[in-house]
Length: 407
Image (tube, rainbow, N blue to C red; front, side, top):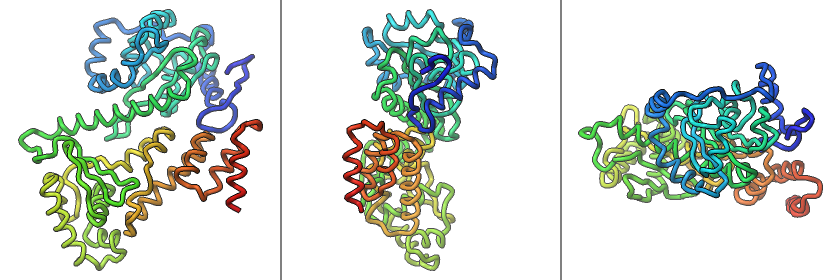
């Protein structure tokens, strides 16, 4: 919080006391913004706003956003939900009608520019500036007129290009930065991104060319499962360990694999192509009854349509800084029963990136959950959590006991 020009408190993502806020205030000062004069300016006129809304990608995902966020932001909820574009301009502002009217006094309205360059530190503008989830409480806002409010915001990306296309924001009182706000927004952003990708795939595949049985992007779940689960058009099927390995490797290596490289990744030997080829024939046969449009192509071996691999979705969450959502999505190692070298490589990359991201997050609760669920024999998450917790935290004794038991 800003008190006499000094920032105090802790960021969710780590580092020194509210470094995120201090750096944002420094950017605002460098732009010669003044706390008592920073404002979003006049909003777009109705006709231009209607046109911008009509053509914006997030318009197609409004039903998802309203279902997950706005539905519970009814009168008396004390919450305003805003959807903005990648430049920080608000396109939709909905929720508690009393609070929406109050927000109008500071021009927190559809069509207004809430970028960091215009109003300084705020959740939607700073989230876009950092391309990461952000929570801003009360006096941490740069503009004086906003310091009675709190807000949480999460950027939204195009999963095909990783480009930022907009931002989701919850604004209100203290509950807007409460422990439930950020996970809710992260989950909604992930749902919106997936919905937009599915809509793109459906538009890009003419009906007459769409493979039978593949109306939506197939999903392959491999985290914590010995037998991968393939879901196509609402129907799921469990794959054998070998077929799970082959399909996972092809979904991971999207540009394709030569027979020699696939043999190396599955059997550890490039000269095992005589074994791989009949295995691929059997995989095609299995898929012919479940997902004929997913049958791998040859030279190189590759999948004919994109597959929504749960591992990639988890890594995308980490890339966005959605550490809590990523940890919740991590149900276990990739195909734990597999000893294929290529699967072990994916397993190590995913596990390593999750561990590194959480160690850097400086969020003790996430580190403790990770240590309990994922890495009970790894002392570093516990040591890091111990260092970050307040000296009087009741959790410290339990952590010390767990560390002593590891010795």
